[in-house]
Image (cartoon, rainbow, N blue to C red):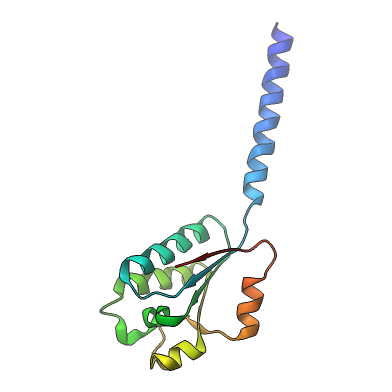
Length: 139
């Protein structure tokens, strides 16, 4: 019985090591398309993305339509929480893009964007959206 217990223990140990390795390897990139400037929805999207970034998933947040208003420093009093989360993402190595035609449409100047938010273009968006194993979410 002792030999059998030892074999079962070793098998269980090896299985748990393999299972942990498989979980650690799953670090698929995440692309979040954020079209809203509604406070709760924006906080959910940006907060979820930040949590996944901290778990090791590469993250791109694409601000388009009214989502670009979140990144305007002129709106800092209205979007304090969201802008702090955007800054946290950038500081942690995530990427935040703003749609160029959307900032023009909503009157946001590039100089008004909070530090670290980048103006996107079709090539940047394509590279992020169609990267291998990328997952997408939209708010």
